[in-house]
Image (tube, rainbow, N blue to C red):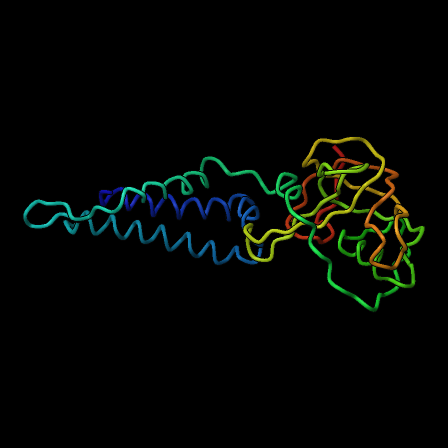
Length: 244
């Protein structure tokens, strides 16, 4: 690879990172929000390295020797580095969704022995993980009969009735993604990856408050919503959901 192509690769990679972090939320498809400052810093460094390298070349310090031979070549596989650089600028791969979630076992929720009283709100906003813990671990059965509201995307169920309301969780980056799911009974059959807010009550299956209880919901309403900003967490949405 010629020297000027190496410079182009550095600049494209840096601009791609800055575009994904400063002018869009594309970086959230790959890493957690807390890594944004490091990505911005990396993008700036790559651009500066490219500019500095170009400046050196313009002063006659390129890869050619005094005998007129170019010694700046690198393995041809380096050309493949242009693909991710260009993709950040021109085409962003789709976010993780139903395709990924349908091919892995749900993330096991953490054990919890003590539960705080549930707020009196109805429907009760709750995360998929908290709902699962209440259903399977809360011996006080506080979730029984309570109408709850959960937000996630649609994943077709592998077997049985209904479909899965899903959230994908990443600890660091997309490579360690895991999913949490709640089976939904009732409601319209919406396409995979559709983001929805579901209200309903626990679907009786198994013994409530024990591991035999199934994290499932009898849906009363299912409404399409916008993909939340914090889509790779199992937190309550950061922005109010809006019906289309």
